Length: 252
Ligand code: PEP
Image (cartoon, rainbow, N blue to C red; front, side, top):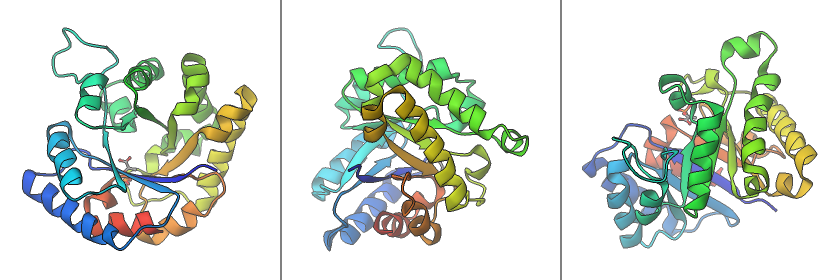
């Protein structure tokens, strides 16, 4: 049985003061207990990882894991501005998002780069959260499945059985930060396609890999999305900035 996982992606938001308030509010909300069989993760910007790791420890937040929003495709060396996976592990991270559409679009990250990053994250002992998803044009021209399956295929080709230790996040680009959530059925249909694609590769891998949905997840649509058989949780951007909304989605 795959656990339900909710991952908050703060993107380039936060401050020392607001992070403290966020963790304090989430700690208070989680004190009274959370649904069992679930995992919760927060991904702050790099400079705040250490602060958030300390706050999570101080508040004994056993329910909340720490993640990063990206990692380098390289182990170490002359890569100014990049952050190695091993450094993130040292900071207390257990998860790293790779291939977010904002990085694919704004930083020209290819599927090959994304797979190289996922390998670095795995080698450092963490779980990569590999993002895939089609643009509005690709969906409107009937190519959504072809595009997403192509992205997944590249990951399968490079990662092979190690994919069992990864999470995949289906994030239709047209739904990210737009308020246009995919209907639960559209999301489920694509998750099913991805699951079947993984099954064709290796049934055991397919059973293990959690497939999260991302794209305008909010407290009022999370229940319906998470009830779908192939949706194993959510990657939440904007709504995760509000601790009450994040808690509500975690409890959905
Ligand atoms: C994201 O950043 O991965 C995301 C899904 O953002 P939002 O929830 O704001 O659409």
